[in-house]
Length: 510
Ligand SMILES: Nc1nc2c(ncn2[C@@H]2O[C@H](COP(=O)(O)OP(=O)(O)OP(=O)(O)O)[C@@H](O)[C@H]2O)c(=O)[nH]1
Image (cartoon, rainbow, N blue to C red; front, side, top):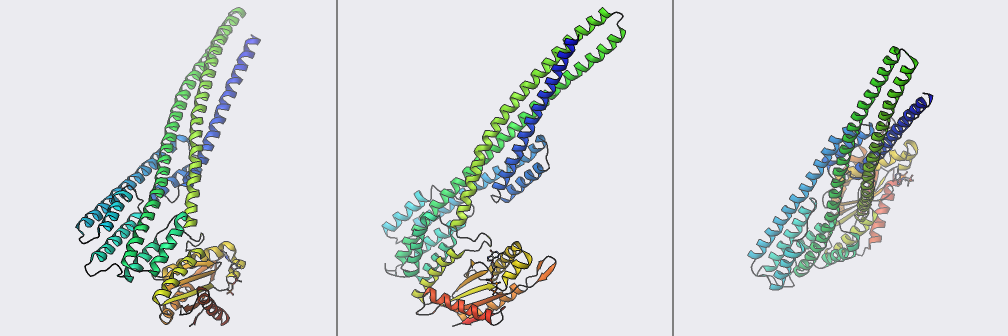
C-alpha cells in the first residue's frame, strides 16, 4: 500500500507540474501576442482614422490584460475596418477610371489637334493611366493635371495659335500644380529639370511636353505607392484573420479540455469520497486492503488519462502558437519595412519632422525656382526671414520639450497666417523663411505686421506661468542684379536690424 500511495503521489505531482508548464506556456504566448499587437497597432497608425480608432481600442484592451476571448470582437471590428479601407481603394479606382474615360471623350470631340499630339495623348490615357490604381489623395491632383493638359490642348488647337505661341499664365499654373505634388527621390532630377523648363519657357509646345512628362512620372509613383499600401493592408487583414481563427480555435480547445479535465476531477473526487466512506465501513484489514487496492487502481487510471489529455492539449496549443508566431514574425517585418518606407517618403517630401513645415532643402529648391521666375518675368517677390526672440531662454527655463512645443505652435500659426501662394519653411533652429510671390515689399508690410501680432498673442503657458513669445522679422524684395545669396543676405540684415533695435518688430531693406 505504501508503494501505491507513493505512485499516486508521484502521478499527482506530475499532473500538477504538467498543468503549471501548460499555464506558463500560455501566459508567455499571450504576452508575446499582446506585445506584437500593440506594436502592430502603432505601426498602422495614420492609415485611416476609423482603423486607427479600432486599433487604439485593441491596444487599450491589451494594456488592461484582457482574456484572449475578449479580444475576439475587437479583432473582428478591425477586420471590418480593413475591409472598408479596401472598398475605399476600389471606389477610388472607379472614380479615376471614369475621369480618364471623360478625358478620352473630350479628346475625341477636340478638333484641329495635330495627329502626333492626339496619338500621344491617346497612349497616355489608354496605356499609361489606364493601368494605374490611385490612392484617394491623388485622384484630385491627377484630375487637375488631366484638366490642365486638356486646357493646354484646347489652347494649342485654337486656330490663331502657332507652334511658337506662349501662354505664361498656363506655365505658372502648371508650375504651381507641380509644386503640390510629392515625387520619389529617384525622379527628383527629372522634376527639377521640368520645373526649370516651365519657369523659363512658356511656349504652348513646351507646356504640352512638360505636362505629359509630369503626368507620366506622377502616374508611375502613384502605382508604386498604391501597390505597397494596398499590399500592406491586404497582408495585415489576412494575418488578423488568421490570428483571429487561431485564437478562437485555441480558446475553444481550451474550453473543451477544461470541461474534460473538470469531469475527470469530479470523478476522482467522487472516488476518493467513496473510498473514504467504504474504508470507514470496512470490517476487516483484508477487506480494507482489497478496497484500497481496487480504488487506487481506478484512481491511477483516471490520473493517467488526465495527464494524457493535458499533454495533448499542451502539444496542440504549442502547435497553434507556433503558427501564430510565424505569421507574427512575417508581419512584424512587413510593418517595419512599411514604416521605414513611409519615413523615407517623409524625408523625400522634404518636410521638417518637428514642425511639419517644408525644411531647408525644400526652401532652397523653391527659392531657386522663384528666383528663376523672377529673372524671366521680373515679378514682385518678397523674401522674409523670421526668428523667435530669446528662444534660448525658453529652453533654459522650461526645458527642451517646451521649446519644441513652442516651435510647433508658432509654425502652425505662421502657416495659418499666410496666403496659399506663399511658401513658408523652417530654415533651421528657431528660424523660418517666407517667400511671397507676386507681393511687392511695400504691400507685404501690413500682412507681416499681422503675423507678428498673431504670434505675440498666442497664450503660451509653461509650468503654470503665462509666457509671451515674440518674433522678429527681416524682409526684402528681389531686385535686378541680385543673386539668391545677395537677396537672402539683405533679408538677414533686415532681421539683424530688428533684433538690434529691440526685437518684436519688422524691419525692411529695399
Ligand atoms: N527646443 C528646441 N530648441 C532649439 C531647436 N533648434 C535650436 N534650438 C535652440 O534655439 C536656441 C537659439 O538661441 P540663440 O541663437 O542664442 O538665439 P535666441 O535665444 O533666440 O535669441 P535672439 O535670437 O537673439 O532673440 C539655442 O539654444 C538652440 O539650442 C529645436 O529644434 N528645439
